[in-house]
Image (cartoon, rainbow, N blue to C red; front, side, top):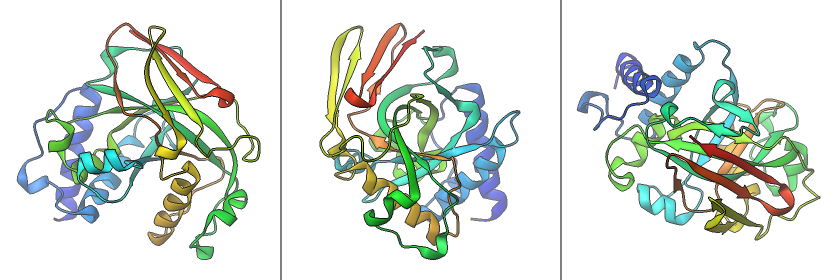
Length: 265
């Protein structure tokens, strides 16, 4: 696929993002056939996002960090997308349904990059984590699939091309040091209208979200892309994704990491 085709595919996806609409599929000439093509479309899409007023890269999101999700979309490894400042807020109390197409909620553990990462030192491992990360927090990612097909029919390459389906990211303001909270088997509960909807834990995220952090930093290093000081990584859902419906009152309870509560209006 040529650069023009990557750019045109990105324009189609971007238009549907801005219009909050879905599409059946990309035309054959624009459809990514492998990981490389999918990320090249995502890169072109990122350029379009950054042309929006008051928008910048906030960090990265990681998708399908649990086996069930990976099997569902037909891929044997995680993928990543971009987080943007214009589509992120701290402790947002309401989300408007008119701003989304078919949104799902995913409770995630977020991490903040300590300093610009020297990718010449890669590959990193868990022993390096405190030199890479200066804190963690609880977050909720809203994924919104641009395609009208069921998720198992969309395909991983299409998901990656659409920025990993990432649409909005809400984070708690409280940042915790890595030695304050044990992320092994840390429980997360999702309440909808005060009723428990889903229960999960951090072991669902590559057995520990810190493993997802290392995977992403090393994957980006191979591509020559360092993460920068103050950027965030959202490491993937600790529960099944939950379809948001109008008038839902949601509480994502991360225990000692805090809560995120909002109304979907």
